[in-house]
Length: 156
Image 1 (cartoon, rainbow, N blue to C red):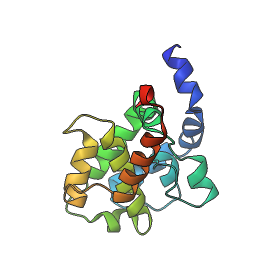
Image 2 (image 1 turned 180 degrees about the vertical axis):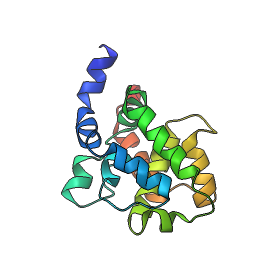
Image 3 (image 1 turned 90 degrees about the horizontal axis):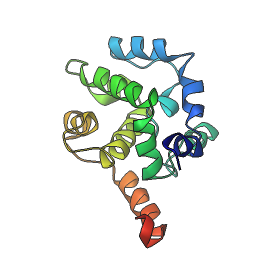
């Protein structure tokens, strides 16, 4: 299987299509230190099972393999890293002030998800350290563990 086949298997273009028209706004809002519009689902996706809305289900990441493919995607990976860095660069602010509720929780779960498939010291680990005292989101970890437990032994 070619790597592009794997990327297509996860329907990653759904994220690109959602991000393209609003990505400049997203950057402006993050540089200003406060999210104002509705883009959280497809900029900082979270693991499947954490949201009940149609949007959260549509943009949910369903496996650690999909999260890894997202990070390896030539557009999505760099955009996620850029947006995470913009959040890290916001001077002395709380995550609740930046995103409001419940998007502060979504950011926590997204950073936890991508930290789990990234090397120690990644931007996602840095975000967990800076905004959540290094504590990952328990729900995300539980869902990842249960999903991993459902895989055949040769796919774990």
